[in-house]
Structures are given as C-alpha cells and as structure tokens.
Length: 258
Image (cartoon, rainbow, N blue to C red; front, side, top):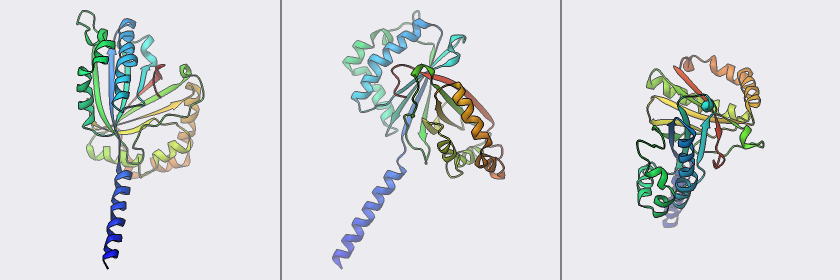
C-alpha cells in the first residue's frame, strides 16, 4: 500500500510539472522609439547593438527583435521597434534597472545614456508589456530564405470596444482556430500576444513575416479565400470583436534576431 501511495505521489508530481510547462507563457517588452533624424537612429542603433543587446545576453535574455517602419523615409515622426522576451514578468524591471550598474553598458552605451535634451537620442519611448497567447506562448524565429533587406514584417494591433469583445477575439485566435489557419498558410508568425499593459487597451498584437511585399499580398489573398476563415467570420459569437485595426509594415535591422 505504501508503494501505491508513493507511485500516486510521483504520478501527480509529474502531471503538475507537465501542466506547468504547458501553461508557461513568455512575457515580451515591446518598446517603440520615436525620433526625427538619422543621427538619432544611429545613436539608438549603436546603443542597442553594442550595449543593450549584449547586456541582455549576459543576463540570459536572447533573441531580441529590432525593426524600423517602412514609412520612416517619408515620416516626420520615425519609429524603431524593440521586442524583448522574458520568462518572468518580474524580470523586466529588475534587468532593465540593473543595466545602469553594469560597467560595460555604461562604457559602450555612453553616447546614448548621456544624451541631453539639446542632442537627444530619441523624442520618447512608448512601452507595452505583452503576454504570449495560450496556444502560441513564445517568440518564434521565422523560416524565411530571402535577403534581410527584402523582408516585410507585418505588425497588427487589434483593439476592442469592450473587455468582453476583446476576450472573444483572443478566443478566436486560440480555440477558434485562427492561429492554426495562419500556421497552415505559412504566415511565419513571430508572436501572438495579449497586451497586459500599454497605451491602448483592451488590445492584442501579433506579428507575421514575409519574403517581400508581393509574398505578403499573396498570403493574405489565400487567407481571405480560405474556407476556415469564411467559417470563422460567419460565426455570430465572433462578430465585431475588433473595433480598430492598426497595421504597420516593418523591416528588420541587421542586428535583429528575427
């Protein structure tokens, strides 16, 4: 009998571990730098590539994504996007704060860190904290074959009119099968995530990637004509779950992991 209880205890221990691993979702810090000129972009690039990302690697945080908007060439307000994955929510403030005590960061990131209001590295940073979806909990490096310079990353932000509508849209991606559809059609998603803190809420965000804009348009044409998508959009429970869709086209920086 004693052995039976031991066996049962071990069984439940492994079950709980398995459930814990299955439920593990990563958190992402998503920062948007707003700036006006190439001098500022160079300062941000130097800091990220030579100080910040190497520091994160020393802290066990790898695979950082860095992107710029395709509209930057003509935009008055230019944007650069940084995507950083963390295993624990509490790691975000701890690791970022500890950076200012790191001698290597203080040395290699001096120009950025000591920038003044007369010669600023950026105008502002807009930050959000994201949590990976239940059925897509972590960041994924896309399987793209073409040149980095030709790649197109599509960032979509879906706002909802109410929290209830928002959770139905999250469900549509997960249990409804929208993620599965994107996967089947090879959209090469980087992430699907809930915005748990940010300037626009309730809100979810996701990023897909393509070889070029022509490839992107062909994928979306296949998506809109797919029977599964037509089935999902015909379901009453998923009607009007998105009140605003903000779509941005990005390209990766040469030092980006994605």
